[in-house]
Amino acid sequence: MKIISKSYLLLSIGKELNELLKGCNLDIKFTRLSNTYLSLSERTKIANNFKADYFLSIHINSASDKTVRGVEVWQYSNNNEKLNKFSNGLCSDVSKILNIRNRGLKLSKELSVLRNTTMPAALIEVDFISNAQAEKDLKVNANIKTIAIAIKNNLMKLFELEVSTNDTLYKVCIGAYRDKNNALNQVKLAKDKGFKDTYII
Image (cartoon, rainbow, N blue to C red):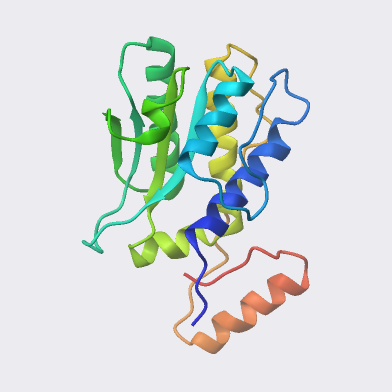
């Protein structure tokens, strides 16, 4: 059985986002773009030293209840209207991408990266990796890219910059087969033609 870690998936989203933000009129600093662990205090220190206007932490949730799915964004408070709009927009977009529940904007004074950053901060929980279907969905490269696009577009709105419309992705379903071998053959055919993100659901 192949297992993909939360860390790998989060890194994939971060790398996609980094590429998408190149050329945008934003001064961005990522706390990590390699598989190197940073403590929560190190992450907030980087943000505070950078004197960022906003801080965004990207996470994937987990729960003992394996049926739970959904996206949510956490903030320390809701007294920043621009950040509230960003968080709500991000929740709405990711819920549509993965066809999951929009769990909405939530508040916490306990989360370290929200409590210890000196700028308005948000923490997105993209979905629950403890859910088997969520894990499958998050392994799909097209979903990772589309989530990164959603984050980028909401960041552009947050900073009142023009949102590009040429990075929208559309999913295509080829067909349904009773015989698994027929489905596997169709996947192989699609991959042979260069469609590397082809998969069976």
